[in-house]
Image (cartoon, rainbow, N blue to C red; front, side, top):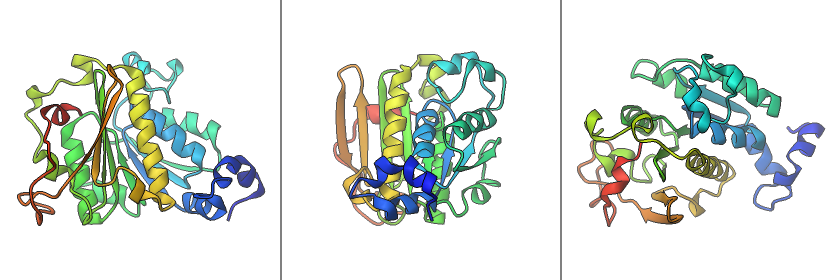
Length: 265
């Protein structure tokens, strides 16, 4: 149930026919696990907390560096050298005290991922490495948890929505992590901070839509790519891959397969 203060706080959500009081209560009863409190996690966390998600779990093993502040806007200069999960929660509690936050200041691995993701309504992946993206994809597939994966590099970004057993998974599209030396990181190649803001905000929007029952109109089963230099968005449908070790029971992957799509982490 929503308190009178929550009804006032979320009134602009509740005014929408697609949300209403019932939809807002769905958001309050939901749990989202956000992987990464960095460039993508920062804007996503702000909007998820503001929207009234009941519980937000934040997973990140890093501490804050001054170079992060150009895009990781959930943190402040005063938080340099602090753990990112704690820094993020300190900021977000000031935004919305009605949300429950849980910090997991650790790196995801095969030993801890199931316990961290357990009972999540949805997982939002915003890490900066392919190994974590594949690990989260596999865990969500077996745990039957919807997943929204984001990636950014330079002026480019992408979002992929995956419902297990319904949409092509991350392995259907990318097969396996590329060799570490083949894909530059943001630390090596750079990134425009506002691109992270765009992609993270899209991830949060898709998560909210899913939780209130509007997933059919969004990015599940699709890849959205952004070239911020030209401000060109492309929407590409995905198909399950027969060779995928998880869900290979369909014909080939999406057409066309663009080389640039696979190099954004």
